[in-house]
Amino acid sequence: AATDLEQIVSLCKRRGFVYQSAEIYGGFRSTYDYGPLGSLLLRNVKEAWIRSMVQQRDDVVLIDAAILSPPQVWQASGHLANFSDPLVDCTNCKNRFRLDKLDDPDTCPSCGEKNSFTEAREFNLMFKTQAGPVEGTGADAYLRPETAQGMFTNFAQVLQTSRKKPPFGIAQVGKSFRNEITPQNWIFRTREFEQMEMEFFVPPEDSDKWYEYWCNERLNWYIEHGIPAEMVMLRPHDDDELSHYSTGTSDVEFEFPWGFDELEGIAKRTDFDLKAHAAVSGERLDYFDPQTNERYVPYVIEPAAGATRTMAAFLLAAYDEDEINGETRTVLRLHPRLSPYKVAVLPLSKKDTLTPLAHEVRKLLADRYMVDYDETQNIGKRYRRQDEIGTPLAVTVDFDSLDDNAVTIRDRDTTEQVRVPIDELLTTVSERLGF
Ligand code: ATP
Image (cartoon, rainbow, N blue to C red; front, side, top):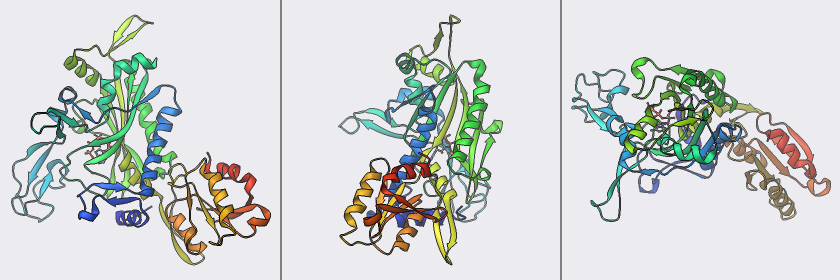
């Protein structure tokens, strides 16, 4: 694993995973753009989540709700009243901090001055904007600070159209926006980020059971996707940490270079959200159980993860340096499902004689997998590049290939090489990747 965040930040910049946003204009602070490799990695993180949370189950459905939303949503959810952080300014160095994140609330972490903070002011984290063409006359709208509310506002419609009944879940992946006071640690905390959230609706008496279930499922998901078990843990919240809606929360924490920190929160939200939306909207948001002839408002268990933050964790955990023939190499040991490219096709030489066959091989693989094609520099350097971006397999097309119709597959982790007939290439690649 990486011991220093800078190892990953610089690799990501050098290889095209993550760039500072608007860098040609000096960069827009704490916003990031995902480059050719980062966009693929981020997409794979989200797809791995959807695969586990939706595809492999029969009790969760996916939605994609709007980012812009009217004030009523955030009035009902409690965000207009409660979604704020206590903000203090240092009267000496003029820097601004979140009071609840200060190690020592009496000492400025920037200039070291004692008792130099102003009174704390509550600062609402939502981005407010106007819907409508003429400035000042439009209706107020908010960029969503979480994806969760889309699951509650669509609860009745999903229930009706999907033929699901509790226990069942509604999942969503997408962008959220928070006007964070102190965005920091690269893509760990940014003002624009992506979340992967699921609201699981259950009969109230089963809430504790499902909470335990989802805490374990979610912890295991990170381990199954390549994070070493000793780098992740579940941390139950103390009572004074709980949000206004929660009767129990555990965070999945990952060992970042600065210590264990949150990747995901799993919360028991009771019937808080459905009841609040029912009260504000006047709509009925409950479930009629035809078996018992009873009507009830389901309780909710919510696993809420960050896709961009999780991507940082996967990169940090995958980072490794080892020695090959006396030379140090950097390798990203990403789980094959997460790797931006699954296979690299590398013709041994740029000569015209090899190019047609190499492209045939590329096409064959690209029908099923994301493939990189690279014919510049010597083969050793090209292997190193693929190791550094986490490509699990490299396929070399050489001059013998023209005669024996076979290619060489090289494994990222072991660097072992085997010769495989082109006819069997897809099957072999699929066996090695596991999909
Ligand atoms: P924090 O205490 O770190 O501000 P939170 O507890 O408010 O986070 P949640 O509201 O539970 O976070 O959001 C669920 C998940 O969304 C978090 O675990 C995190 O992975 C992600 N997330 C939240 N805020 C940000 C952010 N500003 N940048 C990147 N990811 C975020």
